[in-house]
Length: 121
Image 1 (tube, helix red, strand yellow):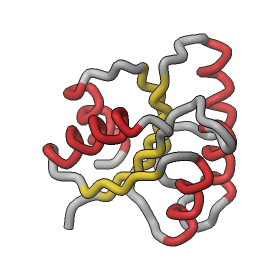
Image 2: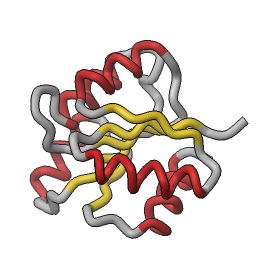
Image 3: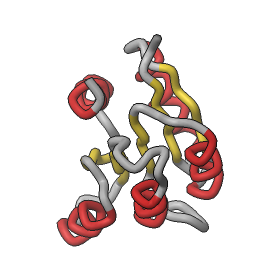
Image 4: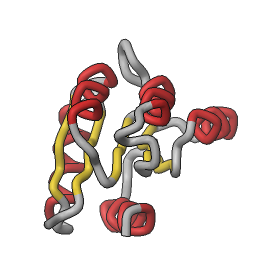
């Protein structure tokens, strides 16, 4: 059974690129268009990895990460922040929220797959 990854991003283009990359590497991919939709999916099922954008309208990536860490179902699930932000303060905020890792957009497809494999063997 393939590992499942949830990608949460308000950009359909990014969701499509992440999904295409991960499906090509053998992962099952679910998508959510924002943090609220992502949280709804997270409350319904267990994922092996969650990749979220940082800056989204409504529930942003930090708030989503904190909500994931508060959820019994996905509390230990690796969470990767995929964002255009490279500010060290933002990275610190991501770690404090419970993020497992940080990837910068535009992402390198091989690096994305390598990182997902590393956090969810």
